[in-house]
Image (cartoon, rainbow over all chains, first blue to last red):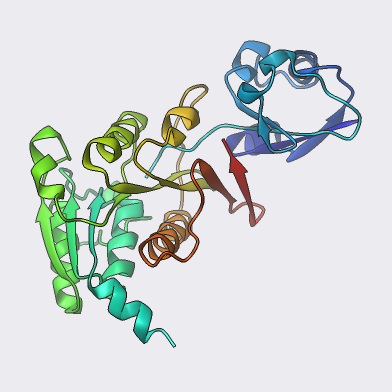
Length: 82
Length: 209
């Protein structure tokens, strides 16, 4: 299983701070998530900040980054108010 | 216990950009730390919608410029020297930054924050970033040349939702904590590290972008 943790408004909008799924890569995970809960579309989720085990997917193979059992994925959006 | 640290901070000069929810709390805290000189920018005036979370907003300050009120309150405390610029930071103010040790980002929108990333490069001055939305916030220490803010704001940005008094106060305190660590070389957040704060669940997390 892949553990997905949410941060920022994702936590409020999804009404959960974490979720578990099976997925072969980030693309697959985001599709599963948008089907499980439609608050964010797959396209919107692709605009999130996504880290796998603390590494930004932009420094890996982006949405084609492979996932394996036990990986931790963090999905967040930044705050901008003051 | 703190005398050596406070002596060091008294020799420092700090710019605070924004004197609203984050900025008011930041100016209060650094005034009581005795920062030598505080330069405060804000072109906005207090209105009744600010009372729920902006420290210096009250019945007596409604309609007054936020930077001027913050500087006046600092002078009342009587430790730090304070100067207000009742305007939003822009190109013409670059010369005023000379000699300052850090800039604190207490702005309230993405464009202003991305501009501060460029200000850090042009001025060579580190920016202590903080932002809030509802129960959530983030803090970062943006050294000149860091892409922290460009990376943070490159994708999805949620509309800013209503917040409450202790959220800006907490994030402001963490920004001041990072400012002290940075100014005293005591292990501030590293380059492109971001401290995430969730005050709904009372959790924090540090990530590297």
